[in-house]
Image (spheres, helix red, strand yellow):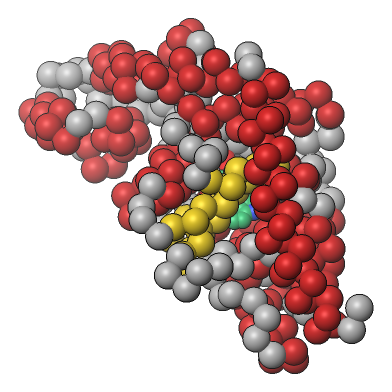
Length: 326
Ligand code: ADP
Ligand code: TRP
């Protein structure tokens, strides 16, 4: 890699269609980043990670297509970005095995994401437990320096740095130590229930969905029981929290005043929000549908990307194998 090129990398699991949280927290920041000068971008669909939750080949394929279509709809440029499917570069699983031998079991047991999923999911498999190691391999395999993510992923990046440093203590410098990149105001988008929006929580807003489904999702956003005429607290209102990410600054300011004054009902705010989403993401919705119905085009883009990704992966893996004596 040339000295003044910075490499960024991020992935999204194919556990469903990317939602508003994924889009604002990961997709848009990564795409904006990729447009800067001297940046080389690796973006991928983490379909090996999805296997921790999805055990149906048809759903896996559909989710992968939807995830790819979402990235492309939001302006990912496949000519400038190395865009690939994780499973098309299986070298990552080899590196994950090596890394797992450098990270203590006791520390992995402390990962927040595992603790959280263990309490919510029925299928608590060891892939879920090893999830952060595979993620560390995703990052270290490509010498990535900057990792744009939402807040929930910070600990995984900390684990990645820790594993790389442990390896370095024994074998000398081998990996690039990555840094996270958080966009302050979009690092945690709340779902319809006020908790972190997540594909596995049934609280998502899918901006690509049919209008009817979108309406249902927006109408399910929880609010306080204040009456229309009563003043309302925008600071603690989940509906406002979501609204402010979609509306213009000026409209958000006006909405705050309406909350404080009273006279506006949550039902009306929800109606306005639906209209704003349909308008703001109108092009992206069309593009998404285009890619979903042009599978061959998406496949071509992904397979081109995986060839480029393989070149870097083989180089880094060669370096690691040599150090380990293989
Ligand atoms: P999910 O939790 O819905 O399964 P992923 O784990 O696939 O989503 O997350 C993909 C990317 O989107 C990660 O960078 C993650 O930090 C970001 N992300 C996920 N949910 C949110 C959210 N609610 N707010 C901001 N960013 C998010
Ligand atoms: N674990 C990430 C998530 O759930 C997805 C992911 C997998 C990822 N590998 C990655 C993100 C590498 C950044 C870098 O959101």
